[in-house]
Length: 306
Image (cartoon, rainbow, N blue to C red; front, side):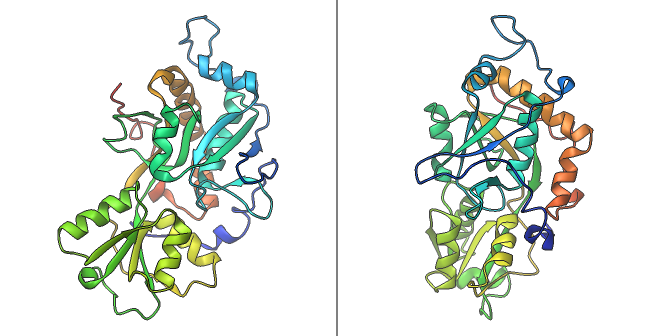
């Protein structure tokens, strides 16, 4: 997977305004979505009361907001520390979908990546929105939307490191974030003798610090997140391993509970509308991503198990 995260991450795209307010620790961050045009609010009439809207969508509108889970990693789905607003690729896509569904506000709960689907099924949140790969084992515990976009992993090392190729990593200690596809990739590398040791870190910040301070020799993580992190944090004496061909490339979607299938259909309807009218591809381009990351309507259908 080629990494084409350009300087756009540092300028207009990352600063696109999402009206909202800051939050103190333990309080969900919020962003407000403008009312949708009338033609964008149509949804499948798959409800018991015949209202034309799912029970979850009705409940969300009554509350005035939807609650999502995220591990708060930039540039995917995070709270901007300067403005207090929600930002990122996934948030821009999600905000547009919410506008079209008539959802006025988004609140985000910060949850460790490995626990997000658990919290979803505990009814702590309405959806999981955090660049989550649509994987077979995750389809056993939740429903997933159609594909938002696709991407893959990258490896980071200290500048001037002896580890300069994928083959040289056989002697390296590797860090990764449990619960992610990249941790599973690193586990496979460990089993195959392609790395010497695997150490888990709970989030992107501690993962990067571990490599920067020499606690581990390298780390494997989301390519988009890594490119953004290296371009915005001058304190990190790190670089991406290059050339590098991704092994854990996957497709991104959002998760809902099995009982919220009607809401899933409503969400997919507006998501695919965003693909058809070019909105979704334009959001990706605004973040320096090209057509390689885009997945069309038909090829992006998710085959849920329930």
